[in-house]
Each structure stands twice: as structure tokens, then as C-alpha cells.
Image 1 (cartoon, rainbow, N blue to C red):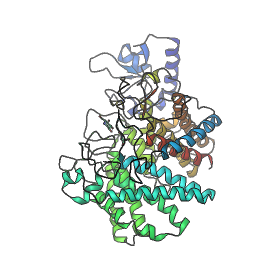
Image 2 (image 1 turned 90 degrees about the horizontal axis):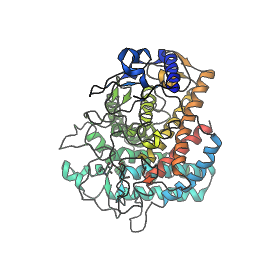
Image 3 (image 1 turned 60 degrees about the vertical axis):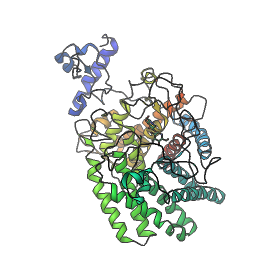
Image 4 (image 1 turned 180 degrees about the horizontal axis):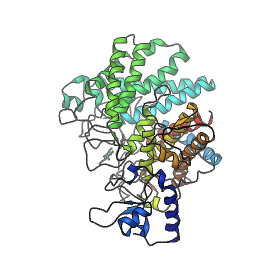
Length: 535
Ligand code: NOJ
Ligand code: NOJ
């Protein structure tokens, strides 16, 4: 409990004024989740509550009086937009080149995407299905940009890179691997998460299968084809991918409802737990939607398309089941009690699953905005680097209970902030701002009302924001994205190389060097930012 100060008195006033907007759920007590202490307002339940704060003594009986969220946090002041644009432009160029440096590196089979340059402490010199698909999505965006700018040389460069990756992945579909030993079905080899760089199976022990791979792969391939075929007229290339896509999608159809026990484990994107995963469900659903588009457009198989769409629909209630009304966020896993904090995986799934024509759980949806707020703000007091910079957007990590320090053998302060998570939060805000702008309105619900208030717009559930209120909302949500890039820039310092993490205490780089996904996530975030600015 901190001594009462002028600041606490000011905060008291602020909370008192804002309290009519505090939703019931904002006083939830979740063990282990960071809360902003209310100061000496908390000596007893009555003084705490009368100060507009939440009273939930900790399990050891000590009083715990904390600010209700989200009202109690003021937004960081967004940085100068042009300053971010200028820094980001140079960082983008560097990121693209460093990312491409990790495609088909020396000693690998063409099309391989190494997860990082790091070959010891940690050994990340492997091809991961997930990292590869997300990286090639960022390359696909380069291909699309080259079409827009009419640069045929670049179009050919990027198309070749994507096709090489597709061939590499197709090769992997023909070999057996340890996932096959688990399920006993050779067709299930597409659930394997990690491969040697020469295109052979990685046979060491690992968390497998990881069921996000097939959906992520299909999403990237179809994104590419949607641009490539109209640009080149080459429908035969698209048709030639039928076996590849149907194998991935059949895997999803077979496994989306797995119970995730020993015979059919379902390991998460963080490669740690077998459970029912929000991220996996969302990536499967997006893959199925894209797979259905493929089957209707180039695969000449409307029966399969219908099957994929019906499984995609069946995934929706499964995704919805992760929403925790009392917590006001989506939980990544359902069946665990020791991992309750909102997880970066939620943010990643929303930005990676969105589609202009399919708003399901998209960044501007009330539940996702609420989840993003709760996920990001929980890091405000979690790392020393954030305690030192409370006026700024926090550097965010995977989830609060994380202990993985990136395995570099040097940094011993535990799990740090993840660059790809900071990028993802920025991207989510850019996309949300764009969605509201395109919609031309925003519906206020009980769920997003406190979030809108955080963005400076006080409104009643049931009302619809337009005009200046909508503009304020959009400007401030976009500004929030920039605040996260500002934090990224701060910790990047004058260097441009991207590792996996920032040390939680010193803020210096830790974990795998030149992590491909860190670069890819920066690129997609900037693309989302540019898309908004061009609206
Ligand atoms: C390596 C995994 O890739 C990472 O996600 C995980 O946290 C650690 N292993 C746990 O040791
Ligand atoms: C560990 C991360 O948890 C996982 O998501 C990733 O695929 C691997 N590292 C490789 O980058």
C-alpha cells in the first residue's frame, strides 16, 4: 500500500468522476494479474469502495484495494505521427531485408524459412510451419505491393519466394514424422510443427501436433493466389495446389474437435500446453474459409467447399466459449487454472484471422477490443521496464505467467517482452481504427463502453457513435497503435536488429537473434498502419 500523496488524491478525484462508467466486471479479482494499487484508500473495504476503487483482499488476507480498470488508466499520449512514420520506414526496409535473409539460407533446401539466425542458445535454425506461413504472408504483401506499383521485377522476385516455400511445404507432406506416430495416420503429418532445414523430419521430442499450421498455411497460399492468378492468368498453378490444400483442410476437418488428450494432443502456438486453444480454433476457421474459396474457385470441388464452410461454422461456438464474461476477455485456454492472464495469442489470432468481408472476432469487435485492452494493460506494472515508464505504452509479453527467457543463456531475468507481441498490439489498433472508419459508425455495448471511455468517448450502451465522437475514437485508437510502436522504438534504440524478446529488467535484447517472425510482425503492422492512413 503506497502512502497517500497529492497524486493519489488526484487519482481519487479522477476515479470518482469516472465511476459511473465502471462496469461490474472491472472489479474482478484474478490471482496473479497486475492491478494498479489505489493507495491508502484501501485501509478498509468501505474507504476503498467509497474511493471508487475495488476491494478484493489477497489470499493471504492482506487488503488489496486497486483501481478499477480500464477507467483508471489514462492513455499514453501518442507520439508524433510523422516521427513514427519516419522511424518505421527505415525499420521496415531493414526488417524486410533481414527477414529475406532467413529464407532458404545456406545449407537449407530451397523454400525453407528458418525461425531465426540463432543456431545455439537457442537453437532456432529450423523450419517451423507457423513462423514460415506468417513470414510468407508478409512476403505475399510485398508481392501485392509490387503489383500495385507495377514493378514486374519485384513481382517475380516475391512470387518466386512464395512458390519456393509452397514447394518446400509440399515436400514435407510426403514424408512421415513423429506426429504420424502419435495419431497413427500418415495423412496427419501436416500437424507437425517443426522440421529440419533440409526438409527432413525433426525427430527430437517436441510439443506436437500443433494444429494451427494447416490453417495458417492455407491462409497464406490462398492470399497469394488471390493476387497471383488475376495478375498472371496462371490458373493452372492454382489448380496444381489442390492436393496440398485438401490435405491440410482434411486434417482440420478431422481434428478441429479433438479432445486434446494423450491420443490426440493439441499443443499451442507457444509449444507448451495441450488444450483447447483460441488461437488454433481461429487459425483453423480462417484456413477453412480460404480453403473453401480455393475449392470453389480453382479446385472445382463445391462439395469440399461446403464441408469446409460447415466446419468453419462449427468452430465459431468453440471460439465464443473462450469469452469469459466475468473477466471481460477471451481466455486462450479453457481447461487450465494456472494460466489465466490474457494472452498475446488472442491478439495474434484476431489480426491473422481477419478479413474485410468476415468480421468474426475482428479487432474492432467489442470482445476483442476489451480483450486487447486487458491483455496490454496488465503489462503496465509487470516488467521493471514498464514500471520505469508508466506514462508510456507497456512493452508486452506472451502472458503474465510466462517464464521462458528465450534461452540465450545470458539473460537471467526471466521472460521478457516479445517484439512480435508489441507489433501485434500496434497492428490490432490500426486494423480496429480502419474498421471503424470504413464502417462509418461504432455501436456502443456494455462490453466496449469502458474501452471507448478509455479512448475519450463517453457513451451509453445501445447508442451508435458517428461524427465527432467517432472521429475521436478512431484517432485515439490509431494513436494507441503508435504508442506501442513508440515503445518498440524506445527499446530498439539505435539498432535495427530484432530479437525475440526485450529483457524485462534492462530492456536490452534477449533470446533468438534475428527472429524472422519479429520482422514479419513488424511488416504486417506497418502495412496495417499504411492501410489506415490511406483511407
Ligand atoms: C521453446 C518453445 O518454443 C517456447 O515457446 C517455450 O516457451 C519453451 N521452449 C519452453 O521451454
Ligand atoms: C517459440 C515460440 O513460442 C513459437 O511460437 C515459435 O514458433 C518458435 N519459438 C519459433 O520461433
